[in-house]
Length: 117
Image 1 (tube, helix red, strand yellow):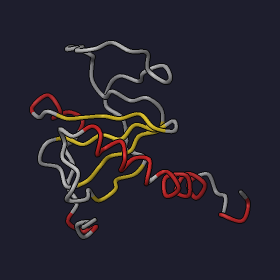
Image 2: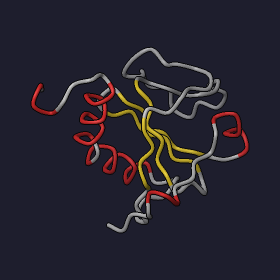
Image 3: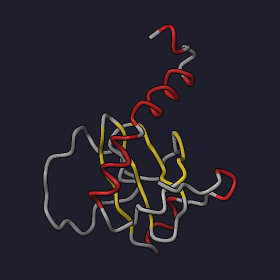
Image 4: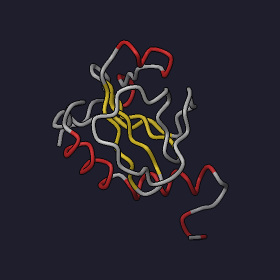
């Protein structure tokens, strides 16, 4: 799976999401968001929708209480070439594959090393 160089990653800011379609998947207590044209996948802690839910195609319960409004990203991951903004299945596979990396980052942010786990 080809991944772009980390220095070339770009993501749509939350206040500009209304101008671009995007997909979100909720995996392991995190939200993975990919907007059309982005080269990075934004990861948020919790269930984050970043804006109001305006169009609901199929309403299913969120894994936790949704957080609305702009949020600071927890992590930005380079998007593999094989993952497209409109392919929820590929985004979910990517999210599942990244869970160890996300958990490691979470431990570092909270001041724990891998050996403390």
